[in-house]
Image (cartoon, helix red, strand yellow):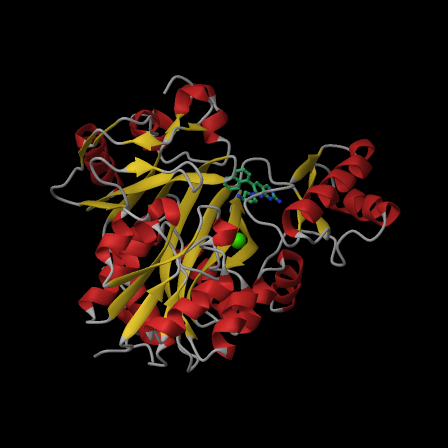
Length: 450
Ligand SMILES: Nc1ncc2cc(-c3cccc4ccccc34)c(N3CC[C@@H](N)C3)nc2n1
Ligand SMILES: [Ca+2]
């Protein structure tokens, strides 16, 4: 079944190739866009046609909405897949696509806009009975009100940007004396990073786990979840290791959290693939936000369910009903993803772009490599430092760890420093192996000399 004749992928690197693979399997032609420095990159080689959209800087290329839409119209692409990052959660772009008669492979622009407000989405979910952390329902309007509410919530509290992402602007506040300054700093950062100074305060959880649920919804109101992922090993809010299912999940907790995730999808009028993020601490979970895009770590969900999420996205975007019922979605085994970044873990993870002079990727039982690099490729400095995703599947967590260790051992990338040594250390760390992964894992002593 061909859902579209041609799809433009408005992205680069591994995720562009990932989408092109799903298209090729479905007999759908692919259109790549690329910036000047990406002219020899893999996603350009892989596509059926490729168009230069501008200079290196994202604002001139991968964020250049008009140029991308013009290229779609010129190439005859009926749909655009945004990948993740760049314009994936840009409601204005999704709206422009709709106005130009181009199918945006994702949710409605209205849903993207609403879920883009952390404060608004918390409101919506609280009203729907989904657990949320105690917070300032009207955001921070005055310092005196904030002090009163924060006092009722109980310190420590955290100041967060409503239009924010990736933890930018987050301020942890231990006592009332620090609150005013934290609010001012949070608002300043929010204004400069997101053009919206709205901040809110919520109860701070000291060592939560980041547990998220994959949901998949069609435009006819059918909704399923594809189980849970744990993404607690992060550094500066960049995830490094993700796994599915969450190691501490129980049937009872999964039943409650998946119902909450489906409720979030329902009240937000969601369709296509999405992720509901929760914080978990001491047996309780709290809605944090809804990500209205396919995520980097969709891979581990695909490996434990056998479902191709990009294929499902294309199908739903074409107006098809889900052919999957919840009973059809079975969890089998355990999968782990290690993000391989061109960064130097021993030099504060500073990006280390450059030419790859030796490249050998792992393989064999249970290994999946989604990468945008090849021998001789020069990693450009102006984009995200993630160059590859190394995933392993095993019949259980122990086997997936053993396979990941082997794959890291096999993986050869010379010419740039990478996070491979860090992942080697994590996969051999007794806390990780025991499943004790919480959000400050990387700060702990035992990961120091990786
Ligand atoms: N109320 C409250 N309490 C503790 C938190 C702790 C974090 C956090 C901070 C740093 C690393 C983390 C890793 C996994 C899960 C959460 C975190 C957090 N965020 C938000 C953005 C995301 N990248 C991390 N929000 C929190 N919110
Ligand atoms: Ca988000």
